[in-house]
Length: 460
Ligand SMILES: *[C@@H]1O[C@H](CO)[C@@H](O)[C@H](O)[C@H]1NC(C)=O
Image (cartoon, rainbow, N blue to C red):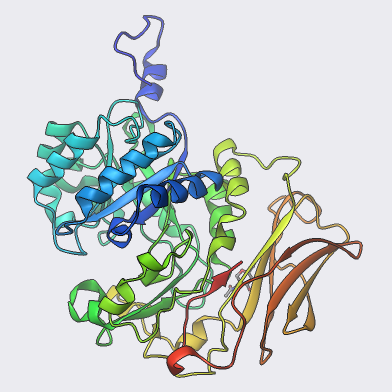
């Protein structure tokens, strides 16, 4: 933290370090419009669950015309206060959902909440303010910054990072990338992140990089697509990106390759795009009706399993090293709940045409497999058993920790479920004895609700 009177012994170099944020931090993107029925205790529950997962705070996504914002923000800061200063919040002004934010309203909100102890201030002084898009309103920000002293880290991913970094004389103090999914049937790489880091400079003028991590992506909200904009394709907002193998690979990239200043998890509760890692509460699912979804594809589709190894991943990211002991060994698993060709696709395509990507058939993009990840001290003597409707399959690991097999870390693999249906149980055994199981997710079935494919996954 910056104190007003700096000790005289500080060198220029250590001063520069002090002015940049202190520690690496991990946030989760929370759609405030989805929680307009939340009580104070719902907010507290979600914050506690996030804290348990080693998440430092929420990026509060707020849409410009949403009348529920005011009450929700009061509750959010109230709940964070009750957590005793252990959980941070900052604003992510959404310039797409309901159009651009007027500058005076941005200013007023930042001024109102920046002084709250829960508002995230990287150097203890300047409130971090982010956006979802809005590069056309970059011209508002020199004024907003002058009025609020905001530390400005927008997501302007629709621009190349070299342009975003210099927009309006370089008004951004850092950039958030929303590029958290691979194109087509590939594994995500860190090329995009490296382009951001290069554009953000080095040395004393380095701007901060906030990297994004997501577990999945599927959306089928025809009415939202009709509004046009970037999401209007195929007569609606209706596409899929590949989540197979994504979460664990991406966290390895965060912790061991990119090592960004900050991480933003996409998301805590965006049920409409199936990349939530928070709990699914019925009171948050109104968007499936308003968006004209053919089926409520989040209801009963828990993603809790994607939080299980976050304490480990975040520790490795923050400390820069893998511990000699991982703590409690465990397993998590995720899968779609019907074979890709079991039911009509619902018009969903692979890739986003609106982003210049070529369309694929969704079944070419995802595998009918049960994916699993095991956090182990070592895989010596370890086997994996995947049971589907009582039929047992033997699994292996196709990715091991960077230091190699036999070392502590996360091991991942998958087995095709083919035409097997029923309850899924994934067990990890060492020397024939079960050490961890993942179970309790929705059953795999050859039938689909409303006879339309649900391209979301369960994670248990
Ligand atoms: C993605 O990575 C996993 C783990 O290393 C590997 O098994 C799989 O074949 C890769 N998939 C593609 C499409 O490259």
